[in-house]
Amino acid sequence: MHEVALSEQLAQVVRRAACGRKVVSVHLKIGALRQVIPETLTYAWIFTTANTALEHARLEIEWVPGQLRCPEGHESLMQGEFDVHCPVCGTVSRIIGGEEFTVVDIEVAAREEAAPGQCAGHPDEEGQQHGSFPPP
Image (tube, rainbow, N blue to C red; front, side, top):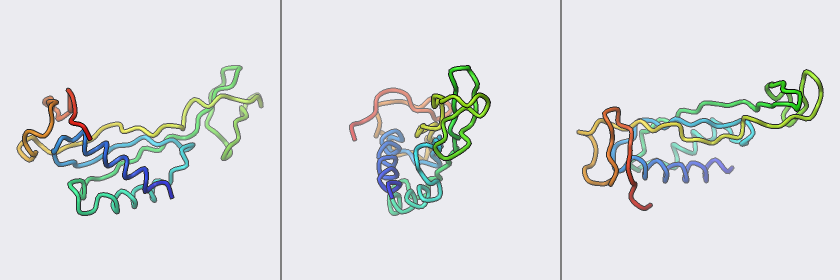
């Protein structure tokens, strides 16, 4: 179950990016070809973040299907688990989507709820973090 290791690494990245501010939610894009089970990752996230500053942060997962493009230019979604043949012309296609594991954004609490002085960066009006981050 590699979802536990993924959730541990994700928690490190989120803590670093949050710079001491309370994290409300973490939005991910995960491709179908990453072999991650969203429910298992969510459970691992709850287990990994228990009794930490991330304990109540929601994990929001956007699922990205496997996407193909054949040499003829046809684009399609993968039909079978590992079938990379174009459903239109039957040629072997190139994978163009579905391999993502991306942190899209991290929603943090308002500034007055944040722990002061824990990040060298600075949040903009919408709470997006800019600048340098402290070492892990």
